[in-house]
Image (cartoon, rainbow, N blue to C red; front, top):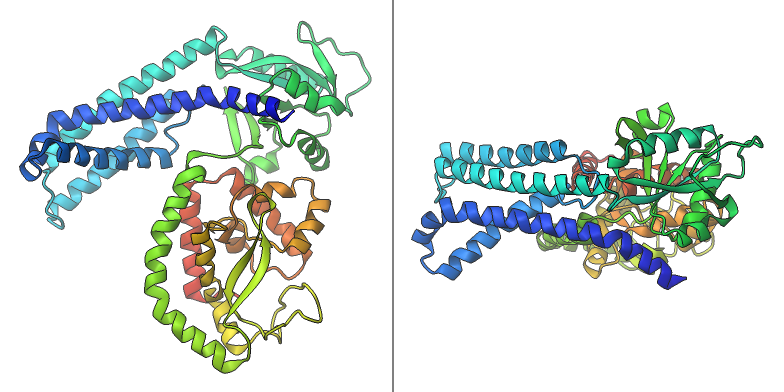
Length: 473
């Protein structure tokens, strides 16, 4: 069973990885050609050694590659829009070049490359890179049209909505979906519906076996009554399989922005990837964490000493407070914070949330919590790899057990590293009861579905505003 799931995972992912790396290499080749034609002669005046010039090019090119990666320009999916990719690439690179020219014109920095040289480099780089990308993406589209690379897709719902979805996807094969069959949903109408030449693969209760036997990578939910309880139940059954779920959204879902909506030839679909990982999440996120926290911790040391003295003077007990929390993949670890309450505050009561004007909070602790300074020692948890700067807040085992029973998909919150701050923290204050945690779940799910450098940056800026404005509690 596990081996089959791994095989299916790599069968789906490997072709996309190959495309991503091919585009990455093509960008690097384009960058090297442009560098050799325009910049190398200028760089040689400062670095006469050829190998030093190569190192300069590698650094230069990696900066472009990272920028492209952050902006989602290395996706391996077959359905990537060529025009959208070209527009994004031009917008990103042109912005950087204009900024370079502006700084050079003001003589703020003495660049070795003049504005004219940088403009020529950009023009050659983009001409070659975009041409190669367009050819690669066009070849992908051609493969889809002849039936190579399509995602094996099943439709849950042998009903009129299911037939409509199947008909739409069938007439848009260049979008990469190959309908392999229907699954009869538990709430399908009793009437006999003719599915034509598309087979019915089985019943809803056997969905896991059907996914595995047919090597399915996409599931379209076309339920007669797509209420949240039904969808959560189905997602619970599918959990563990490397599949993407697509649901036709209602107007509220689209307007609220709490879900990621994908357009397939004009038809909006909610996309839920149960194995939602991307390049930024797998590698760059950790790099950015380290780049930020190391200089911050060094500069914060004098303030940490003053805070430690203040905590010790006001009340007995340790300076730091440690508490067991549940992290990624249910792994337990101890969070580290400046102690803001009386020592052993929960010794008699057991786990409980802080209240407004909670008498257990010390005067120093109230100040620390107001400006979120009590969270700063958790940068040590980030260094250890237990946490990230941005992510869903780690919860205590007691509440994780309680909420996992109530919400079948609560474990999805534990699919990413927890964070010191997060989308739910800037949308809502500290938790005071279970209802607060339930409310935060929707924000956490939104963050996981839309995880990106841009969203993390937005949360960081909002968190800094909360700290300096004293809006913590």
